[in-house]
Length: 126
Image (cartoon, rainbow, N blue to C red; front, side):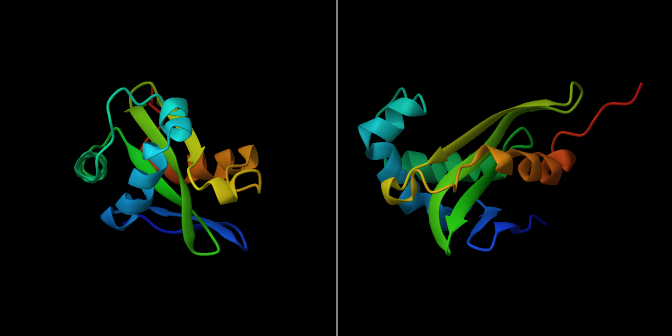
């Protein structure tokens, strides 16, 4: 079972769930966020719910919600996980404009994310 990862007293990563869909949909509907994450279609709440559901059941994706003072402010997504090559793509975005520039997406959080996700992207032997 996935767990909450405390990064700082005020910031943690939680498993991404359907409870996070409304905030995600609001963010990706903002052209600044949608454009920066490379959306190619018009976002809908239905597509957002489907993406979360698919990500939860896909072994090549490890989605996490960034929470600052218990408010969902962004996401950390490991996807394109290749267990054989032990590689993945890492995306971090802060969707909540009020949380940007306050350290919730800081680069020094990458190490704990990767450490926790080793089971998703384990190294190959041989």
